[in-house]
Every structure is written in structure tokens, then in C-alpha cells.
Image (cartoon, rainbow, N blue to C red; front, top):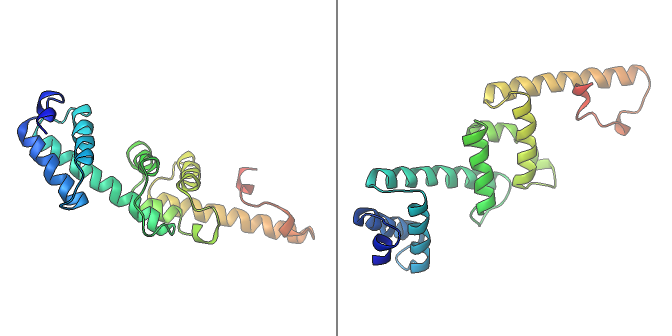
Length: 175
């Protein structure tokens, strides 16, 4: 643990926070390797004060909590989100501007599909992002527009006496 101050350059107060945080996350029998990894990560992020450590803890809790809710929504009970899944969640929220609520709204009908991975959610959110729909309200408006376009296309096909089941109406709104 002294290496954290000497090699990583962490303040003693920050080292204590590493220990407290690790115990809170993993319990009293936390492995020293886990604490080393946390300390190294914080050093790489230049966390040099108690305030910055608190901000990092809050940020990590927000990301892991949100990613865990998405994982649970997709049926991934009993496990924590992986690092790639957490990275995707950070991309959606930090880079693209989605909130947890807007992500859930965007994927609310995903349960009926068989491919319920974060990568699949990523493709759904990317399409909403391209439409400029990152808020719950915009997602709802986009969905309504897409539904109307599909319904209009179905009605037209019925008038033309064509079989709807043979056409992919998912991206019909792009024509």
C-alpha cells in the first residue's frame, strides 16, 4: 500500500479512500490485487485529492449502476456489466447524450428479440442518435413518425394487393 504513495503518487487520504471504496465494493475480504488496480486506475486518472476521489466514485457508481440496469433489462441477471459494456454505456451517456430513461425507452420493445446484447442496443441507439433523438421526448416522436410511415406503407401495399410479410418495413421510412 505504501507503493501507492511512492510509485503512483497518491496522497495518503486518497489511499485511504481506495481502501474504503474497495471494501464497500467487494466486502471485508477484498483482494489486495483489486485495491492495487483501483489505486493504479486512480493514479492514471490523476486523482490527487479527496474531492476528485469522491467524484470518481460517484461517476463509477453512476456508470456501473446505469449499465447494470440496462443489463438487467436485457435479462442479464446475476452478473455485473463487463468493462466493454460499461464503456458502451459511457459512450451512450457521456458522448451521445442519452440518459438512462431515454436508453430504456429506446429499447423498450427489444425483449421480443433474440439478440439482446449491448452491441445490439448500441446499434439501436446509434440509429436514434442519427435522427437527433437522444431524449425520451424525441425518441417518442421518432417512434411515432416511424410507426405512421410503416402503417402508411402497409396500407399502400394492401391496396396494391402485395404480401406484407415478404417486405422488410423496418427502414421503409428512408425511402
